[in-house]
Image 1: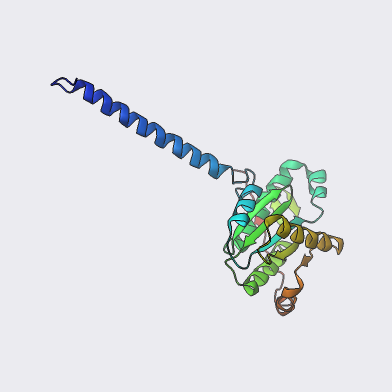
Image 2: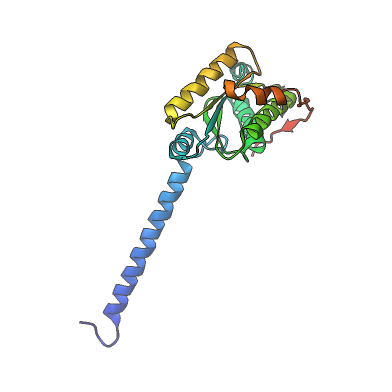
Length: 217
């Protein structure tokens, strides 16, 4: 029974408010954990989990996946150590986000491998931006303290067809990447259906000469 002073009712109201606040705190903590679980801790880009989840949940008729691998990047780690290698990966990740982020999800999926998943861009715009990124990276020295690195990238690109799952799409892109790496450095391999667009844009990009400097946080 509640007294005239309302003390018992007040305690119950306080308990309910505490429960609501506690549940809200747990909900926000879960949201944060889920978000962090989709982020690559080194570069701040999305990670493999985010890539898979977004690909599997996409209902887009046209879905493109590009897998990138930095050419001979092991030699950077061997020559300068993993700290310099990590700083270079952050620079490449930032450059990739600047060049390709408007197209879709940019992710680091492990080691020196990155990916782009896009359904928003036209295929022609995607081809143009991919080639522009390749040329910008090739033309841009990465300056870390007194070390100057020249980095190139190879990539395999695939298109989802007939509602194929992520494993099929990834397998096609990975096979194209393997062919690109086998052909040498700085190679991109597109599916045959995109070759006319590639030919149209392949000669449009002239290498620049911009220095990207990464300062430790």
